[in-house]
Image (cartoon, rainbow, N blue to C red; front, side, top):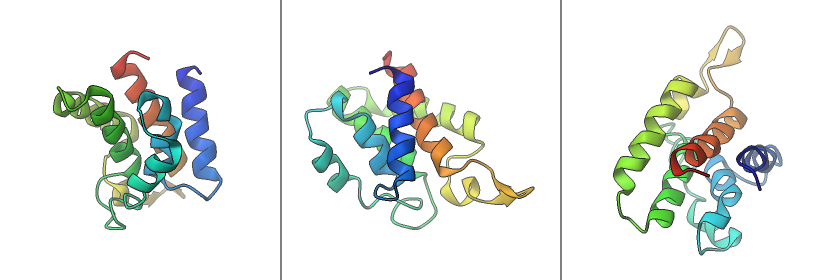
Length: 129
């Protein structure tokens, strides 16, 4: 599966209404881990609407960080996650859910579907997929 296909899978999962942003990203990147899609859904279930519905860090970004930790087995994860976070902020305009969903000129800064797409794409770019 190409990186763009993975990103589109994340978007479709989010659009289905059955997955939150973190789940959409973790499931789209499931082959990067030794966990099943079901396990990834369970572990990322609480990271919607800005980490537990607190409108803080975007769930899509948290999902990418979770996959990074699993893929790197915790070695160098902090630096890689920081790279992902910084690029996500550049592309999306923020890393905070509340800011990303703020309506300006009739549309949000970065809709959830774009957040999950960007999180998957950035993960792939940083990790060399």
